[in-house]
Length: 153
Image 1 (spheres, rainbow, N blue to C red):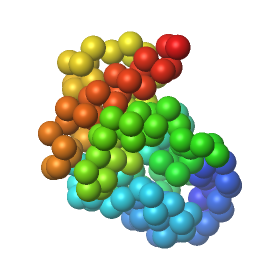
Image 2 (image 1 turned 180 degrees about the horizontal axis):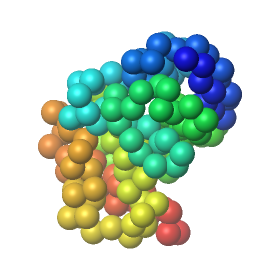
Image 3 (image 1 turned 90 degrees about the vertical axis):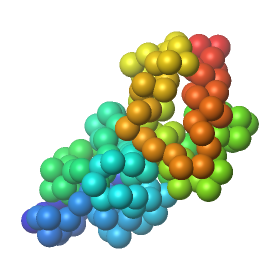
Image 4 (image 1 turned 45 degrees about the horizontal axis):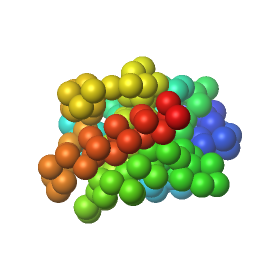
């Protein structure tokens, strides 16, 4: 099937297999390897991207379902310099191995769109679908709260 998508501001027109997952399309066709393949079952959230402005786990979407969509990956989030959420993750040491980081940042960015002044509990609840096996989440929560302060400033 033929699809047309805009990924990080660049339009792509490609023929794809109907069963191709969006995460594989992003990595193999669009070269967006910053979006990791985690579990392929939508359990971990590592592959979270913004699809038409909302965070989705790209392993739970077929590439053909994204036809006509505007997609932002972790690579497109920064526009020449670190996005405030990326900066906050760096400054608060909110990563260890880094595998979950792209998905966490994308989900957290979407969380702040809906709730620009979240409590710690709301951040934890908002990131429930994204798993981290290294950090214990404390610094991730601190980073999201710091980014929220930057958004308000």
